[in-house]
Length: 315
Ligand SMILES: C[S@@+](CC[C@H](N)C(=O)[O-])C[C@H]1O[C@@H](n2cnc3c(N)ncnc32)[C@H](O)[C@@H]1O
Image (tube, rainbow, N blue to C red):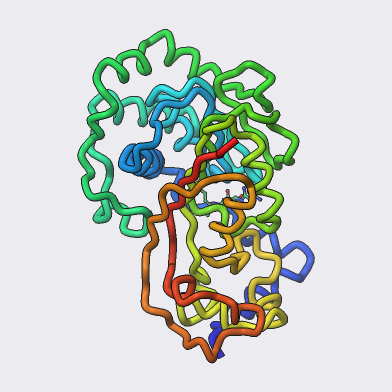
């Protein structure tokens, strides 16, 4: 058996009314400005490395979590508008404002990108953690002008709910697909989110619909079982019934979709994959152990523990 007994107990307990709320009360790293800074700059550096644009008018983020910091970093590097869409409203204006001030200081001093020593679990790794050259002084001077920062502070204190509000920051949680109009966004990004999304086909179609033609998606996705099974990929050996019990009604339980599902859905949504940086790990299970519904996994899927996938909307 690959499921940890403790996970089974926790999963089963989430079916008891009232206990579900004890899972997923926090989301991860975005309580830290340095975490938000490293996440945003990693997406941006990988775009640059693959000859994709690094300047955007409107940026949308799926699943920002405990703060809107990664998207605020996007504004501080020149984006005009940022819209955050989450399943649950975790962030609040007080924390966002505090993180904003810390981010401003990090950008003003062109602080190097926090690396794998400081954040060993953050993906993707970069070949250099120096502050990126393409964020030139002229670009940052314009982005960090005091008049502009005052407008951003006001929008963070009182964010809009949809792009139509005309504010530079919008926060909508829980979101629905029609929340952003068609062809309104230049970049959609997410960090550690798409492995939890239940309706992946609908979400990819929705995100592609938001993008302008030539718009970009940048998603960092983890494929591990996140501690529920003893092997990092033991969730693919697990029957649906056992998984249902172990994952329970936790807010953050993996949808168990492998790397190839995301690539296929992006293509189906009319996007061309440009970047596919996979983190590869030895499989913890053999092909013979795969549960029937995961027998189709490729050997590449079985060994891909996370990936940064960047794609361009074709039409
Ligand atoms: C592990 S947290 C990651 C948070 C943040 N991006 C970070 O890097 O720390 C997962 C986030 O995905 C969000 N999430 C899960 N399903 C979602 C969905 N269908 N749409 C939007 N966000 C979702 C959760 O609410 C949570 O904020």
